[in-house]
Image (tube, rainbow, N blue to C red; front, top):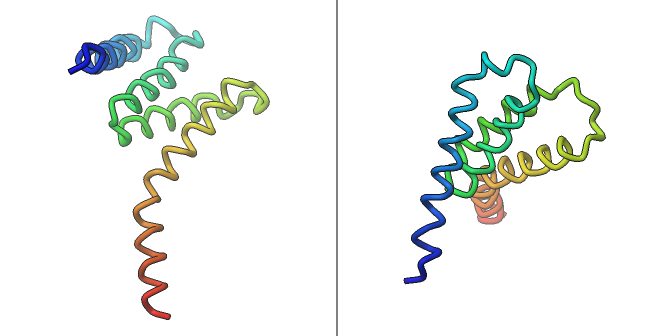
Length: 106
């Protein structure tokens, strides 16, 4: 087995843990953008771990925190696109089922 396959999961988990530490101590950050960005980064870490439910929640928190921000900020646009992919991935099996069921009824 490749060593990278053994190392990357632990790095992903460590990244998520570090971002969680920031979120757990958010009172220290007050209105610092680091707190909001921690939501985005932990969401990305959860995606890499394959935990889409936690990832969606983190992205949703980030988007909510930045709801009044300039919509043309590249980071916000990218985060919204990543969040949309997560939501689409969740709907994928339901849409396949719907297509299969509606096709069978014809």
